[in-house]
Length: 323
Image 1 (spheres, helix red, strand yellow):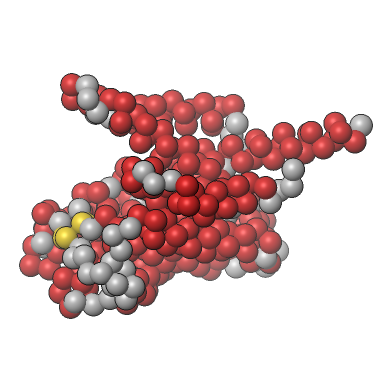
Image 2: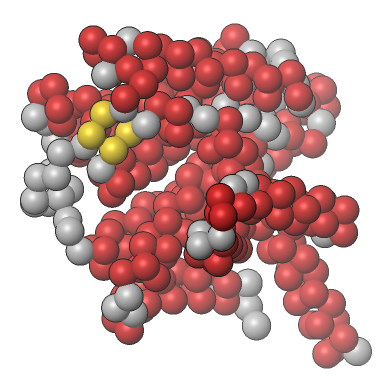
């Protein structure tokens, strides 16, 4: 089995699934798997390839979501325009955050990004004149390609698949390009990278900015699909942790890791909610407990993630076959 088998199975299967699946619940799950995989891949650009473990990436996701909601409701504009504007604003925010927190590492950088996302949450939830405050903003449904108004979940599967493939391509580029090798050097040993003449600070800021733009694009498409933007969701720490969790479980610093993690986590979440929804209180938060246990198991026994573990087994099998 080649290293290309996993992307072919995941993305090829996603493309073929709508041809045989007609159940709306399953199609909705597939849309979310692709979306969260793409958003986690965007996080991976900074967190995996550059070693910048952000815990406030929901800030950029929320910027994208609010861009399309406000442009649609205030200006009757297109989400395509909102996507570009949101990505530009998120890029600028990423550059500022990256520059201001450039000297911070590890948990300190993570805390700085959390603070940024919470500042945006306060602004969005209290600035009623502009963002409608804590009530959130509905995204009006306007049929058509220019307005991204599609009632069919099948159409949304292919939109999210295109998004996922685009972010997957960015990660592949980072794995094989000179830029990616430089980022890997900064991630592994920043002092040594600087001694070799690699502009580590500039590269880290660039990684955050690119990651922010991609995350914003995910937020824009999510808002168009869901049809409502809640500030307490799009700027939540839980959402940021979800991006990191998908990537760490799937395989941090690998192109397919975020998508494998999204398949596992999103499917598990959907199954648990469906299973316990009829029980008293729905056992609220039980899936969060299971996520925590799953994360502990992965970090303890397969720290390279599922994709890394699969790659090791594949290489071991080849060596055994040659012996």
